[in-house]
Image (tube, rainbow, N blue to C red; front, side, top):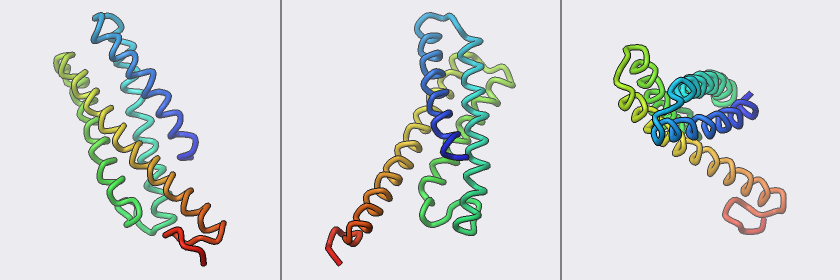
Length: 141
């Protein structure tokens, strides 16, 4: 599920970021920007739920398993910022405040996505080294 949701979320993020920047630069397209941020947030919730279930199946914990501890810490921050946006929207906060929260949420999402991509790259490199007869330090067995 993560393999499908993560690229979808990234695509929605890119479109939404474009819509937010367009709104901020022109003052037009608030509804589209808002809708895209809500969609991004809902996909994030889905990823958090399915990721927690996967983490429980693999590591015996829903969150903060040792191999993903820091990614999960940042994920909680990302989730908190996206949720803060929804609260700002629901309680009719000023639109500039809503957009500021959304941009902060998106910046934190980029940090989190980078963490996961680096971890995935490291795992693939270690897997390739192991298959080629090298240990994780690069020394032949």
